[in-house]
Length: 250
Image 1 (cartoon, rainbow, N blue to C red):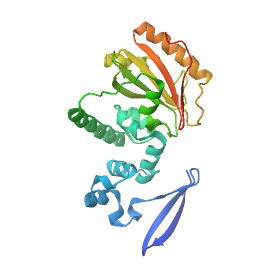
Image 2: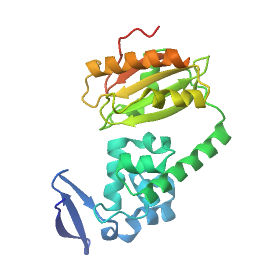
Image 3: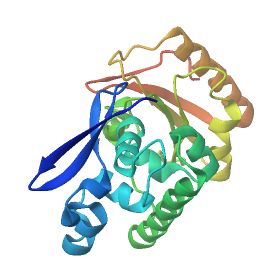
């Protein structure tokens, strides 16, 4: 990737703007920021509450790569994949592949997310969120509405329709090669779920199901019957609305 490096002066401090011609955006390098405005220094001086999510991820990643500066990397991850995606991964290798980052950096994020989950579960206990309608799904998945890439997510419910597990199953345009029934229903077996609701976003803003959405949903309904796990619904969410994929779920 070809980049143009532009040098400027601000408050008598030289800094470089890295212009990526493909993305048409500018990124400040950590070393070119005033010392007390760098993410790690801001955290030490003001506490974590004063940092943006992008800055917190940059602190966690520590450094970038030869191709991508750390602030650019953290900004890309948050914009394209969303905040929740980072906490859903348990396999660093899969995260590294999906997010296009080195494995050791993916391992840092996975370890941090696991600590957060354990601390939260210990403090708050089991989830009490109940899902009974597509509107409940839309309200619950507010973080998916403006993602730049399609995410397929499984909401795993007990017999009282309470969420017992929530997992991102795939990232990318939904197709039969990307998602397999075993990837959808394995978490249901692992967490003893009685049912599952699938939800994926359409960045285009179009909430109606495509032919591919319909075909995959029918296949998963059939697979769920064989495995004894009821696929209750498949909801498409956009920034402004939602719809259920219209197939026979009985």
